[in-house]
Length: 281
Image 1 (cartoon, helix red, strand yellow):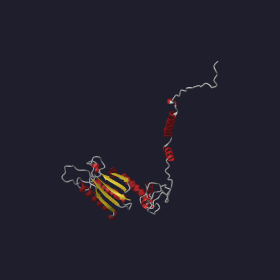
Image 2: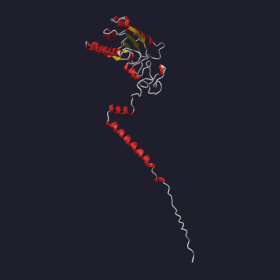
Image 3: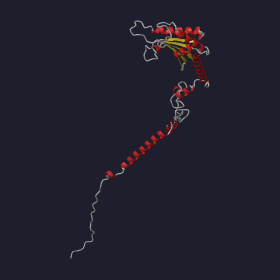
Image 4: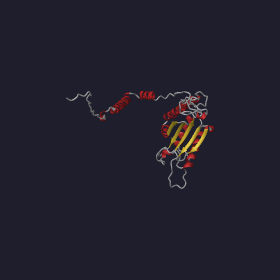
């Protein structure tokens, strides 16, 4: 009879390991990011369609505030609070790099350059000038009701208020010139216009600049007279202003621009023959 062994039997278990492959969870993270981005996109589109311009500006300002971190510097935390010891490198209050000498756009729009102490008096004077200019334009327009001649003459007048002052532009039209062709001799139309302009200009004491413009001539001309014509016509306009009561001390500038600044796309158009009388600020 065979002897029984006291050793336990050895059992070998073989386990098959299967790689994760496409059954992993990494794709779920990417999909979640994509869904989140799409949700944010559609929410943004909904906000754009359901809000007003003012509300959108408020939302944009909430996520990108325009208020500086440090009101007296560029936001730095160094020994000088973000400022340089050199005046020309001093960071501005709004972080744009301006100084009192080179004011920022926001300060310039308010008239604050940091170099004057008039406390807004300059802004008040400019506002007063604009009011005076508007009164002059109204007075000039009202003259059209005095007679048919003046009403027709006003069709040759355009006014605009610029940084330099009130520009009163007198221009010619086809068949209705301001000066005899090629000369500085004024026509009846020009005389009527100058009477009107001088009359309203006497209500203020602003200095006056006169600028002459003419249309371009043919390129085949051996000697182009545009410079002489524009200068002569500007000078004639000055003399006519003085003859109508405008003091000589008010005339600050008389300029001839030849055909260099046309207002019509065709440089030879009659509309480019004009005189500009500027009531300076």
